Length: 174
Image (cartoon, rainbow, N blue to C red; front, side, top):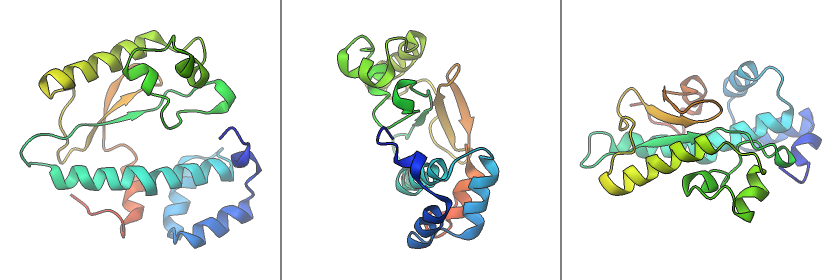
């Protein structure tokens, strides 16, 4: 977060946020154990991402599994070096549309963003638009998610499922 808020978040304020959002203690401990060097702000970011995005998206995918059509999930994990944004929301847009040279993309990803990652993402989106198949397995009980960065794109099976199980009130098991 470019405002520096995540760096200023104290352990006490993290505890208050966990109470406010009724994060189960065991869930918070799992996130902490999986991120031993994380700051309170980074932990809150991971918890918020899962509560607001990953858990609901997994529930939608679970509900659609086996239905007519297919559901494909992806995760963009390439960390931008700009302002320590990391793999922030909307960073993948320049990669998806292969527009890394455009000012908006450079502002988020920097001038040296990996073109090979843009090539892979763009090809997947073009394939999906043309055929409905982006090139990785559709969502099923094995919970496949295409991971785009860091490193080469790869299918991940049930990524961070241990953490997602901690949101039992929010997540229906397949």
